[in-house]
Length: 71
Image (tube, rainbow, N blue to C red; front, top):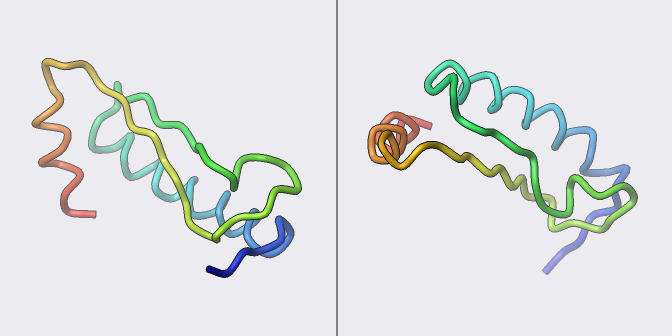
């Protein structure tokens, strides 16, 4: 497994999160969208992946899952 220094992955991770955040909020404006994982911790090593938490109300859960499958 390869690990990346923060300077090599965090700027791209922030950029990608912003893009996905906007897309997810267009699909589900009331969803809670958070950037989580090692890429959010300053100066932390990472595998270079992007972790995003998307929370929604139980009532709309399956509709949200179906809507997000396009991404």
